[in-house]
Length: 450
Image (cartoon, rainbow, N blue to C red; front, top):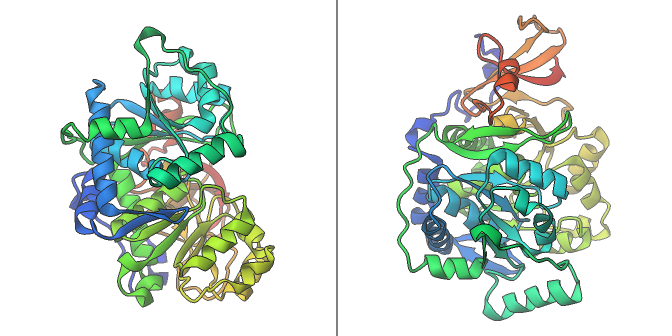
């Protein structure tokens, strides 16, 4: 295929990426943990976690999960907002040789039941704020092991207890719940699981590049959500593609481990998750925003220290612009304002550029492509209103209903091929038959023109 778009690439962006440099996503994580042990990984409510701490905590949680007798490849659900427990849980699951199943914490009981049943999850790590939803469905699922997190876990002994008390008793954000313990089901507090796991030894994962890393459920806009199978290769490729694409904008930062990425979008969403894993690849740190809808507090957090990468959706960018104090934020470090998840508007993009001096860069991707597909060059000086160019190692074709490629200038279905594209949906052979063309492109259902 003639990748004519390569001639429009910025000079420092490679045409291809090579996920084979890693045996698995687990290796990418562990390499960064060792290399950056003393560096900060995240800050949440002004409490910091280092890469070394993330290494130790995730090892402990992984060892605890293994001690429950879960088989290699077992599915473990994560029902957490953007709190420090999320990264610990994700890394712990992967390092133990299991599969992450990201769950939207705001799911209804029906939605949660479908995802747990469809994935066959046998364990779940959940914030207690949402445990009442799990209570309603757990006996209809295969979940045997529940790890119950509280908001203050990992925020320090004194401060953490205060946060948990405030969330439970002052804000009253934890509805009453009672999880049935029939048929051998267990409920373990998050910090207890960490403590118990720290006394055990983690057996290394044998996952390889083509092993499943995540079951990432689609939005379900056309019926029940489907689990996109994302392999270690898919995720590693997406991280390397993002790294290659952002490199020109971040050159002025110098040491990429100094980068501060704002994690306001929910990490259970593939867009935010991929950029979180990119931060790990860099050895950079994340500013975790558990409640981005509190825009006044969000702006105050942005004022605390320079930030360099801000992923968002159009509504988030627009809401920040409406805050009176947003104009007084220091934007001198901002290199990438990445828009995704929905179409960005010209008006919001123009106001963003005028306020921050950093153009909004819009891209396109799907859960099925690890959120990676096309993006505007980060060297752009203004908003283009298009979804940009295919990233390295990606092919895009515009096809008709019969699967034939259309000439330039004609509108048709956007079809995509690349190492970040899922191999298929979980246990959905009929859907997989329809999802791919004869020449290996995934049908996206989106209409575009090239």
